[in-house]
Image: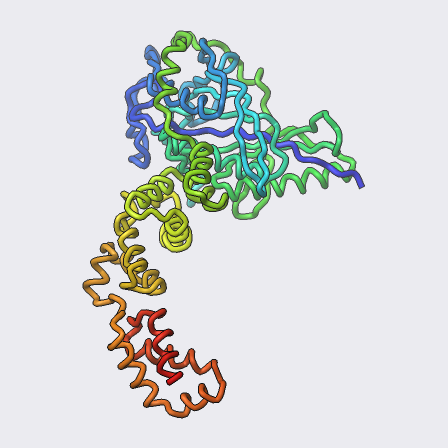
Length: 477
């Protein structure tokens, strides 16, 4: 049977987190009442002139550097014409023939192997508005708050070969925009959106097959599932001797299928021509180099440093650098408790089960780095056990109290006084003579019974290591 290979390219749209829109002074704040953030410019009324937002350019250049793109000294805006209710001007201001940046790459990791995904271009454009569909009546409302919110579109080369690679690539883009602080990358709110182009070709063939474009995917999981479905659909079409139709398809989240939406547009369908109201964007080398100097340490560099400086396993470094807020939290902890692997374990295993990874930061987490470090130091000092430390951490998280204060308030400090522990041991031994005889006759498993009883007697506060040593001594007398 003929085997087919998927060829996938992604077009990722990223909302830039500027205070005002790309061509006017309207706010970009999300979630306000419909049509509150509008003005004659973003409504496309006659006689108005757009003015380019400088911060949009700066943010876009940061992403260009982060993806190793070549930044063009001269780029121009164009009008992309199409007619839709949420596009008041009847065209979208975008970049076409001369984009801001081109020819970059992103490195992704799949099953321990590195894959290079090429970036065709990064260009700046404005977003359209949004249609809100009435669930009870066959009508839709138009909300133009989002019209002219600044976007960058990141277009990949058709280098992606599996749905899993597509999801990992998309996650890497979100990580980058968050590290750069140019977007929150929130897919649920539409700050990061993705269209996927996918075609199949016989294994070994160089020529691409006929592609379909997939839209309406608002999560990494949906991107992966939609591509998996489309691979199966196109494979069935080809094996039946039919032709795949070039079209745009929607992902139906409820049914987990793609549905035909319309024939795929070509560039000439949009009747591109240069935007007459905005002059060419000229960026000097001096300007771009100043922006480059302001870039933070990027995820790949931070990953390599964590492995080298802190001697962390690759998996640990990957988790800790997947979010800049996690990485910052981790390094804040190391300022007060210099045991990189222990801190890594507690963050990954204990903290990240209590709080989503994207929300773990010194500001958002109820347990501050100094509180976690204090807890770990108390374990090292024998004041509490490791098991108790985990329970205290969860209580501190839920109560929003410092773990150290919680230990003091609830009298949870570990008992390390030998006299108190020996007294509890002797009480339990005297109350259980039959179990003592079993132990002395060689039934070593009874030892665990005594440990449990002494722990119960001391309300779980006995130092476990000390308890085991003293219990053995008393039983061996």
